[in-house]
Length: 71
Image 1 (cartoon, rainbow, N blue to C red):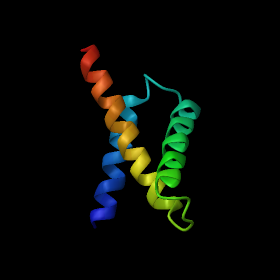
Image 2: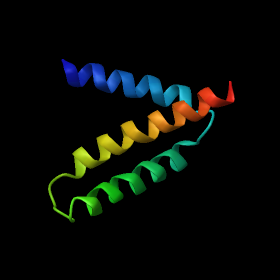
Image 3: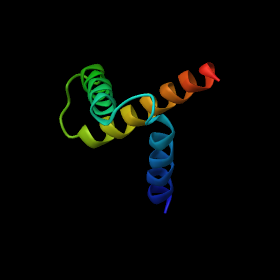
Image 4: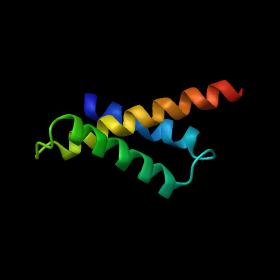
């Protein structure tokens, strides 16, 4: 159940960020952050989904903070 709530929250966050960043740019930014997480962990395989989800959460939080600063 926690996972479902998390996915719904991410979708809601992404919807509020959408006017700021197009889908491809958002995906690229998340991918770069996920790759950074992979490198920081010593390039251990098997954590790609964890890296992606954590990167997604971090990027959406950053964008939300940036949007809040513009208000």
